[in-house]
Length: 123
Image 1: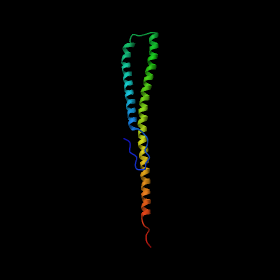
Image 2: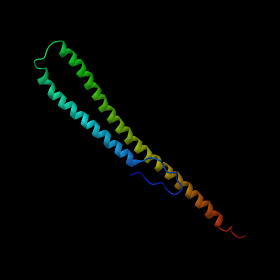
Image 3: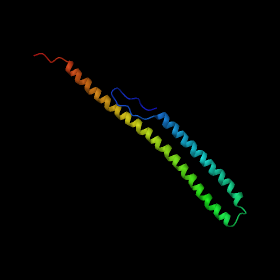
Image 4: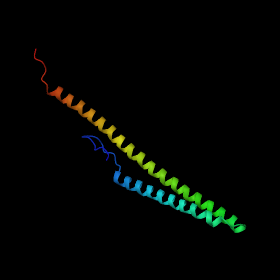
């Protein structure tokens, strides 16, 4: 959960819940695609054992291109999840920074008001 804005601090607009849902969906996608590649790898050995000729050459090329596309999708899903994690961290860090600045400004203002409320020393 991100830090809440301190008194006087502008809130950082970032939906952590939506980011968490997207991260989970991207991780689930990567896991599912990985499992498809694993099953595909297990099925290829028996399929190719006695297969020769132009159809095999065509299939190998098409299969390699498809497997590469699936691997790229896995990589993109993992990258997207990691980017969302970084965005969550940056939003929390920015809110902490804003809170620190607001609290410092508040302390300065309180000190200024206290100085105004203190009567000057009598002569």
